[in-house]
Image 1 (cartoon, one colour):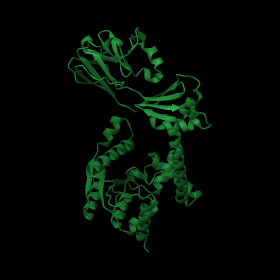
Image 2 (tube, rainbow, N blue to C red):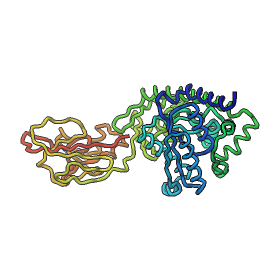
Image 3 (cartoon, rainbow, N blue to C red):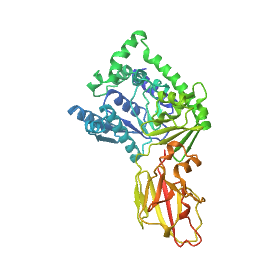
Image 4 (tube, rainbow, N blue to C red):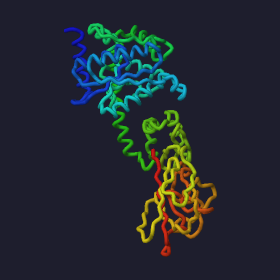
Length: 446
């Protein structure tokens, strides 16, 4: 049997065993014009799988980039499959976002692929990553510092993205392409050692081959075992999360009992890593459990130790102070929106904290939505005298990192609503109320 048929047989066996493509699904292939992606196209065609081709022209190599595009376009025309192309101002985007060219290109292409899949109703996106790519990813992550997910390399399937060539090494792909007499383009930048991934490929992997000539195949077995270990960890974490974590309207609460085990900070890291917290921070959090009020920050979140729980909330950098004028129906306050209407009594009261029912004729417009200030007081509904907002929040057991997220609605110099918690008793509805001002707040959540 020729190498062509052996490769096709392995391709079919791998995609079926990994359940990568279901019957009736049409796959979008990401095709650069290099040997890997051209082989991917050829294997899909040989297996008689329905597909379309998408090509990104990052305009980084002048005429060479255009030649790549023409080759892929001609390949799609030869096979009679849909062809899509997108031109990107990659260098401009990288400079504007202050990221590397590689990072900008990755973000651009996957965003476009997702948009294309949604618009054209493709169920899967296939990339031409192979076994060497996965091995290099694992080694690169190991050098930078990583966990199980980084060590196990690439997965055959991640949501709608599939990698049906992870079974094959780069030399095997070249052998297949030569036997099938395929045409492809070589990107010389793939050999430049100025890129860290290429350094791993050109310097580190050859040294490992001196220790073990079958390095890729044995490392692949190791990655499979790590994938199984990762699956077991995820199953355990799901049970831990169900027992110790609650999520409610933008607030994530983690019972401190999760830190009682010898590896508590590791479990905590797995629970909150997606919010930008590091393992080092989780060690520090574990050491600070005796100190109520300890605060820890990531790029977008705040975590506070509060009594018996760790409270995680998003940083509210988009909140704004606004005026609500007479007659306004909707007012945007950044991360919050207010919906207003004037109603006639009688009216059944709504007891939800997001809605305030106020005596319309006692209000002085414009009303103001703003942050509360230390020392400010109001008369909480049901009470006779004034109380400090800070003391009222303590009575309500509001976590420390949530106190600053609350705002007030004011009329003149008086607070009429501690928004989302309690209205002021002086503005409540009474038997002689002639008009009702209803205001509802909605907020973006975690």
